[in-house]
Image (tube, rainbow, N blue to C red; front, top):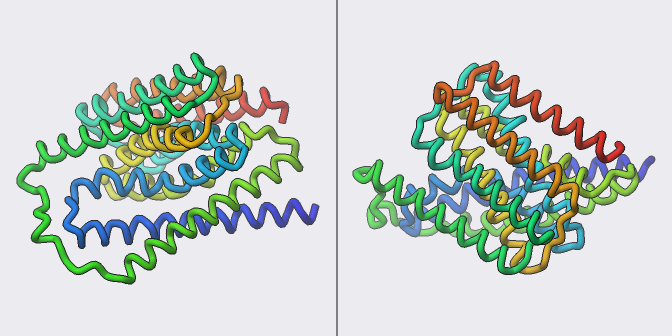
Length: 319
């Protein structure tokens, strides 16, 4: 019992380290990027979604590379289901309404669905994620990023930052804290995976289910970013964070590890988790397309959908 409590305490501390390290990494990366004259557009379309997804990416990467591939896959897929059913659902209930526009849904919303369909098809057809699949997923993400940048330049051409105007001397402190953030992410994510694996073994929880439950902790940055953004009326940032995070989690979170090692996939993930990700994504798009917004009722529907998924997952796992 003492060991179990120690592992739980270590897990909580590790989550705090990872979240703080992610903030540190992103903040200083932005400062260095501006100093180098990198366009603010590029920073804008990547910092929020990618920054808040670093805990999931790190945990999935470490889990896969250290012999717990099913947990790594479940962290990514579980995070995507929670991002929609939990984070967006709760945010819609609290904020009252989250508005959007047709362009965002047609581009980013459909990209989330396409990404879910692609990864599900690969897992179903091959039963594993190989080097070729990893490279393909990574290339798709680069293409999506390029499309976002072009769209931003087209819509806000007169606001594009001029590198010469923004360029300034790089602060050595930013480099130092950037490296500290990276080290914190590496150590924290390794500790998270170790603690979760040990707790799962003691409690008799399958790795796949442990990964889905771990997604609650690793998506904490998304939760607070989305909730705060929506309450301040920054609806595009709120939805963009979720959409961008879901695309990143699959294409990079699973694509990059697959480049280094072949990742086997359990049948439960293929037959239950991946389809659930597709279903809740379709549900979101149906709800939001009705009036280009999510209201409290829509939020409640999303939350109930997530509760149903977790209930079925727990029942199926015999926990």
